[in-house]
Image (tube, rainbow, N blue to C red; front, side, top):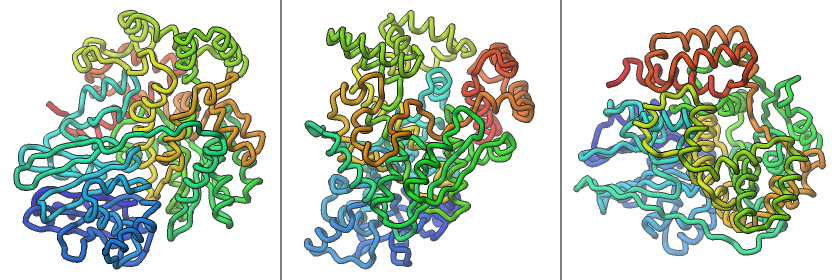
Amino acid sequence: MCGINGFSWKDERLIQEMNRVTTFRGPDDSGTFCDNYVSIGHTRLSIIDLSSRGHQPMTNEDRTIWITYNGEIYNFQNLRDELKNLGHVFSSNTDTEVVLHAYEQFGVNCMNKFDGMWAFGIYDVSLQKLFLGRDPFGIKPLYFFIDPERLIFSSMISAILVHGVPTSPNERMIMQYLAYNLEDHTNETFFTGIYRILPGHFLTYDLNTHRYSIEKWFTYRMVIDATPLTLRTLFEKSVQARTLADVPVGSCLSGGVDSSSIVAVLKRVLGHSFCTFSLIIPGHPMDESRYIHEMGAQTNADQYFTTIEPQDILNEIEDFISAQEEPVTGMSPYAQYRVMKLAHEYGAKVLLDGQGGDELFAGYTYYFAYYFLELICGLKWWTLCKEVWMYWKNFHDLLPHAMVMFILLPRTVQKILWNRFLIPWVNQDYLRMCCGTNVDPRWHPMNLHQCLSLTLTCTAIPHLLRWEDKSAMRWSIESRPPFLDVHLANAALSISSEKLLNGGRTKVIFRQAMKDFLPELIIKRTDKIGFDAPVNELFRDDQIIRFCNDIINSESFKARPYWKWEEVDKGVKRHQRGTINIGDTIWKWINLELWLRQFFPHGHD
């Protein structure tokens, strides 16, 4: 993994400053290239071909194409052979050079050849164009600023900010974050004028006319009749592909089905010991130690653990906010940050992680709401009654039942209920001014597959991947998610609803696929935790209470237009007394306020 930077004019000092900002994304090497039209920079985390031949920016033989690249192309060796047969000559063993020559051979269609994760900027000297591309899932970040005279791009928003571009807090994104828990769901960021290239899209910029276009290049293609055996085979291949590295490979391990499946397959494909890194919360109901130890006993992995203490939060919150660059909706990203810090302390460079498993195979209980809606629309009353009962028997809550009723209500009634009972502290006038009639897209009636597609492309995976990339790269670690493999995703999206959710259980077909790989204790788990933090308890700790009260009672916080301060203050006090549990909401308030202070310390117009 690396940091990539660039802009559409010559300035050696400025491109070096962008590189400096992205140093922790690539601490092993850095480089720049400038001519009269562009400046390109790169900071390298060496994973494949650790020699100096992997130095970037990299060029082809006649110096007509330059690239700054962040990612891994897992099929690069086969593609390299194909390009050799077409007459291309290689001077390194890197996948970067394969991407370079693939563009030279196939143009913008080169991305259809790649199996992996990437974000890159290519400077085509002959065409006088910049070409920015991003992988199908958006695993690797790519931001840009554009105006009539210039283009700036980077792996990090902070590197774009060194240009002094005109920006301010994006009030629409802030209000959607506060009211609906939405992030990374559009091409906008929390900074006005700074955008992200969406997953599966590319941008082309003409250096002479300053015109640009953004196009979508990737679409999913469903595979008919995916079986448990098909899924297991595809998953094994995906994990094996992601072990490609010239440094040791390990894994995050939460103890859930997804991360445990990765670790089980790693044991088979590596053939030697490897490390896992986990968060534990001793004595707390969400502690997953026994599941983690069970996988350790099965795989003989070297296991390392961290936890979260109030003093950790106070010591690290500013660094965490800086690393994330945009607000986050809960403390799960911070828990992940702690795990990546632990891995860094033990010298890890490549970790596999389970992002995407729940979104492909329906791993969250709220997916039952959309399955119930699907059964209602299909008039499958007997199946509906059975699933409603079995869900209650397994989980003892009424979340999906309540969601179904909410989704079927008229929009006006939805808004009244949501605003009055779930977000009474939001400034409704400001919400309407910033967001108009827009609401959470999950409020719309849809079937299970439509919901899975939505979470994969809009409401879940984009922000989960941002959180993971930022937390991992803060500690110079490359994170690889085997579930987010195009072949596996195509197969998963073809699976019928009753094979995903059945008998009140989630991820049924994937559990079937992995039943011979995992201990029964894990395969039969019904709870869903992942890397999470005891947020309600933490926000009742005396140190955290003092920290929060100082922020909530500050003049800057009171003056924000986003909330009704009296309602916020009332909610904080009720939580601290133990009357209600709104730790995640308090985190959002605190996170947003500290983000505003860090990135806009002098306010904004």
